[in-house]
Length: 314
Image (cartoon, rainbow, N blue to C red; front, side):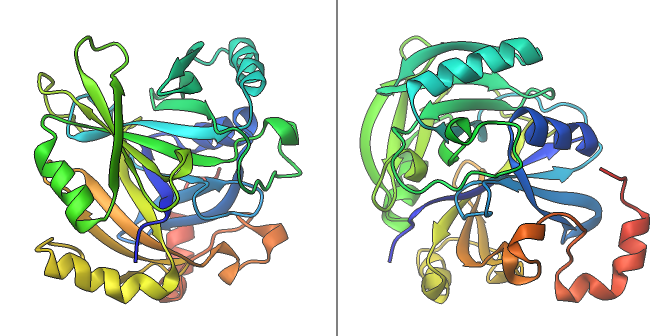
């Protein structure tokens, strides 16, 4: 029983329409599920992914009217998105320049070619060359050519002030493997520690930056709410028991309809989720119509008229 990789990442936006335009038109991702935060139905929960909404490809957003995030430690600080080939990074660098997207240069980091950039709210993102390994499901209606499209998530980088408490949970409870370190970019003398899940590779890595001198982050737009890790559907109950037996205070089982979840915080307060691959986004919509209308889990369906009346159009 093990985590198999990154499942999804959920960030915060204060401008859902502009956010939607950036992730679909600029990054070429597909809106595969338009729904609401199940704990705050006044807010959208928007899922952007590959052409078929594969687990491990979706970056998602809560639409909350907040000011900008105050950057700091005890937080998720960078989200990498996988593409195939260093020539693809060069293509994206040109696209960002023409679109006025804040970005750096193509550089090597942890043995991979990387292009850092930010969205309009300061969300810290990177494109990373994954060598084209594994399956890819391009979206046929994307403005980005199929061979240049984003293939999925990973790695994800978190920042903590000290390694030991987080390391204990990652290895002893979650079963990750500590594999290597590399110099933290822009922070002389500091190291980032790499942990692998499942078969490893960029789709199954968590990077832990040690930043003892920084203040804690303050949540806001452009920040990340939580990261979710993948598990097979059949392992869900066993993971709920494992967290309990490991002394980890968690949400207990939560059925999100499209997947089932367990939520808990690692020792420095960063919110983690364990999520099943299924049933998947086509549980209530045909694959060719994903994300075109507001989807609600069955328990919220009786409130559809009320919920729709309070949402801004995308």
